[in-house]
Image (cartoon, rainbow, N blue to C red; front, top):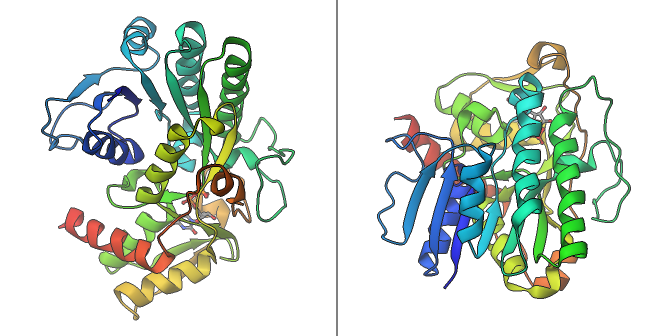
Length: 321
Ligand code: UDP
């Protein structure tokens, strides 16, 4: 069984991943800047195979000591949420660049690495579904939203070079709108946002005209995908989409959430200029092609959107009580 290190381990995806790794009898170090208290997603974990290290991936000497001891490394630490990225583009980029710089400096061929990248790197590419080999069209540098995509993309370049030049086994997964229980409300992601509004009896806020589309991936499916990539050596040195092919418009999503929680709720259309700070730019359509990961690992997503929404609703209702 492997010694695993998970950066961003206390986060939404990280905490689900860690539960799975412990179930699979691995030992895990979670590395995260979040304090170790009742609000920490991992606080209820009780396993001698688990250790929590509080700190920043920008603390190079601490991070390097953790890298040295690990056999599997999952790089999940990130600034999340479009608004938070726009408000802190430098911190957003540093979190990616700092952790990947240390990995490039000291990781070796006896370690295996998963890098959590993002569908944001496809930017404004107008192709549907999005395949991993497409040219990428990002926005201008004065639009701070793109700090996230640019730093993730730079990290992908650096890590794939590390694979080619130093034989460090690694794989990159580009996540498409992962959702599920424990997703932090403060990121402003659309499903927890609309569900919490609905639970509180408030109007559901749809930005723009609501015709923009997304596809949502259950966090359990995302964790399965990560592990299947790590378990198939044929994935190494490559980039894979991780998501769900079921598409919906955001207006349609608000309708579904209203039907699920309370059919009498109002849906309120908010112009982007009133919803988001300067530096925001909408991505109109984003759906992954999952052929590559299916062919390489046999993985495919199991959850349909209706079931995903029910899971999120139940978890959020409990959390908000
Ligand atoms: N959105 C919305 N209402 C909200 C939050 C988000 O209409 O309360 C829209 C947002 O403009 C985008 C989509 O929902 O079109 C998904 O936003 P999210 O921030 O969840 O993720 P993104 O795919 O933009 O990174």
